[in-house]
Image (cartoon, rainbow, N blue to C red):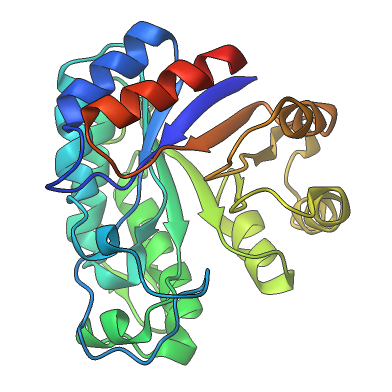
Length: 276
């Protein structure tokens, strides 16, 4: 099982370059970074985990800039977003960012896609909250059209693109590895089966019950049963938990690092080394 990590990198934490070098030297498989463009002070949306919103949410580094730094000082470390808020981006510009990062890193990028939880943040980007999942699907298909080997059009309900020359392409010449984050359910699983390579379940709870439902949606969409990837995300590990994932066929798990300074993060990496 590949052991990757995620962290809220901020202006107060360990630096991207230092962390990336440590992860590669220690044998970790990847680094995934979350995204929040801003957190409006006047906010009625409750924090999903309960209580006050942690400080790091309003201080996150831009994941693509930080991952580009990580790519420049490593050669094997996987690089990913967990997750990219696709509806908060222009899809044509985002497609260029993603393709460039994947190209310059030699195909090491994984696009984690999500729909967000903070209504106020999304509203400032002009996102109609009830329509955000349909909007995300549209924008994903725009990006996939731009990543196609030949100029390819796409016209959706919200977004369209005409046949275009768009380079660089992702490293493989097609869409990079894509995982959709979110809670289990028919709508989420329809997105996974439509345009992704798998699911990024937060914490990994309930996989025993959810995986058969996801597999049915996947195969019902005509996808190869052997190609589905499930990557539990932001996991606080234990030997029993990781053993359970392995029994379910999970091949990668993403462990949560604290949003802390260098000494604390390296101490936790020392602890997580037992799982490598």
